[in-house]
Length: 436
Image (cartoon, rainbow, N blue to C red; front, top):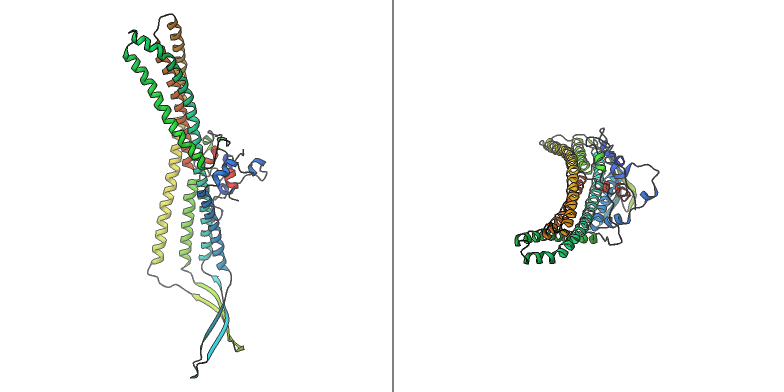
């Protein structure tokens, strides 16, 4: 089983300076971990490999490759373009239908376009980063889907254990209860209350079982079977996060920032069209029957935009509006993350107090049941009182299990919000490794 990144592994150093787009999200995507990688990090966990092999993730990987190819395509525009040319047709200087043919080459080389091509290349590189971030996001989403399914199964096993113990107590006491009811020692109402407790527990058990059956199908979807251990979770790392610190890269926020950088590059591309476009062009051609008398031309092709009816200004303003909207979205996300972290902190504190109260109630219920059992033997208590208290005891245990599971889900949802689900399993480094 591999271990992944530490919280400071995903440091995002791409948000400073005018040229930040060239380094965007490198820390998260490539993992600025030490060159002295331990042996475990050099291998991807087999369970994670199965998740990475899902069709949707493989498709996301292909989109990265397509984006990388697009960078090469755009970069190729900086090279000199050479084209073979030929013409064939009738001669126009006589009445005979004689064909004439010429052949040659033409070339063009971009010299200056005001930075449009450079901005376009940067834009293409940013699209590579977007595709990588979307890949990482998709892996994190699928990983959390498996984690949640496994926790549902584990939660069901706890509830099943409690329910079986409770059912055993109910069944053992049922004959005595029926006898006491027939002898009018206990009322029908008391018996019905006990049955309601039993049915309530059965309903909780069946609901948890249905969820566990569905969760097993999720694991099978990713080819995970009984030989694959459940993921061991690190549930405490969220306390180390600092929302406003560059020491932590939140993938959902990085996606917004990358989109902003793309818009800024598109503005640069539009602004570049105000400049003169200069390219070196040349042609050389000759009649195929008289190659010694060739014609050639080499010179500069210069185009200068004069008027476009304000189209560029409208395009720039549109991009500026999109940047402002994305920037506000990023700020809203930061606020949401910060308030969610505060809410989780408060919930955690309340949970500790309530959990302690439930533990005390469980211990107290156990003592009462033990006391009632002694009194029953002495004839000072009824079997219905004992059975009811024991049913309450198991219900309290189940409530405690459900409460622990509720806290787990609150933590998992927070990791999902910030896009760092991989920190739950220490697999961030391994996900980064899968990009190579």
